[in-house]
Image 1 (cartoon, helix red, strand yellow):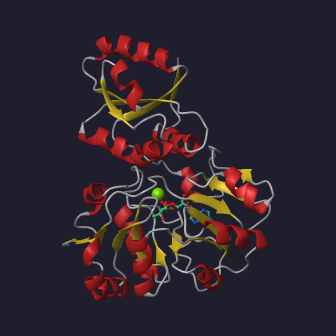
Image 2 (cartoon, rainbow, N blue to C red; image 1 turned 120 degrees about the vertical axis):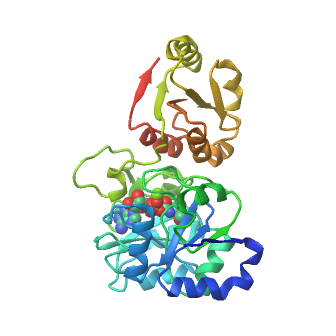
Image 3 (cartoon, rainbow, N blue to C red; image 1 turned 90 degrees about the vertical axis):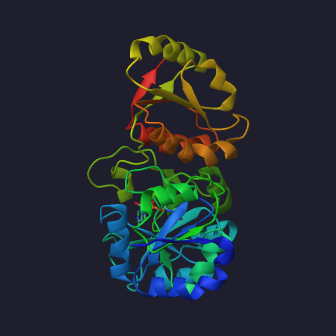
Length: 341
Ligand code: TXA
Ligand code: MG
C-alpha cells in the first residue's frame, strides 16, 4: 500500500480524499494535542478491525471515540452524570477521556466487547477539522505498533505505519506528548484509569468530590481498563528505573560502565544531569520545565532504538504534576524493573 503523507496546509484541498478514505473503512493517521492517533470510522466494525490489525493490538483493548462537538457525547453515551458534564464543560476540548455506559450505536468491536465507551474531544485544529468534515466520530488509539512508545512526531508514525495506512497527516510534533487522562465516569466514585496532563487534583477541584486512582494498579486477570494488562511503551532495549539520589545513580552507572563493555548503555535524563554520566545520554530537556520533558519523553525512548541500545537507565522523576503521568509510562516501559541506589 502506498501511504500518502499530507502536509497540514494541504488538508483543505484533500478533504474529499480523506472523507472517501474514512467512508471506505480505511485508516488515516492524524495529530492530536497529546499524541498522534490512528483513526477510522468508530461506527464501522470493518474500519475498526483494520485499526487493530495495523497496530497488532489485542481486540479486547477498546478504542477512544474522538468527537468535534461537545453535544455529540449524547449520541454515544447512555447516561451522563452531572459531574461528568461539568468536566466536559471545563476540560473539552482537551486531554481528558471520559468513560460512559454506551449506546447501541457504538459497535462492540470499538469498545473491545465492553458495554462502556471512551470519548474525548481533542484540542487540535487538524483533528477537529478531520472529524467535522468526515462527519463521523473517529476511533483513534495512539499511532504506535502495539507495545511500542506512542508517537509524538511525524517520523515516529512513518517508522511504524508507512505502507500500512492510507493517509498520514503531518501536524509536526504534538504539543503535550503524553496520552490523555482516562477517567471512568460510568459509576461513582469516578475512577482514574490513566493519568495524563489533566491531574486528579484538577478533576477533584471541578467536581468537588474525591476520585479513586486505579491507574497504578499492576493487576492480572480482570482489569477495569483492558489497556492496563498489556505491555506498553517498550523500546527494544531493556529499561531500568533508578530509585534514590541522582548522584548515587551517577556513581552506579559510571562504576558499572567498565564491566559492561559489550553492552550499550544509554541514560535518559534532564539536561542538567547529562554531563555527569560517562555513558551516552539523551536529554529530556530542563528539569525546570516538565512540559518540555513530557513533550520529549516518547521521542527519547524511540531514539534508543535508533541507537541500538541494550540498557536504558532513567532515574525516578517523582510524582509531582507531570512527573506522575511520565512515571506511569516509564515504569511500564521498564516492565516494573527498579534498581535502588
Ligand atoms: O491522548 C489519547 O488518548 C490518544 C490520542 C490519539 O487521542 N489516544 C490513546 O488511545 O491513547 P489508546 O487506545 O492508545 O489508549 C486508550 C486507553 C487504553 O488504555 C484503553 O484500554 C482505555 O483507554 N479504554 C478505552 N476504552 C475504554 C473503556 N470503555 N473502558 C476502560 N478503558 C478504556
Ligand atoms: Mg496507546
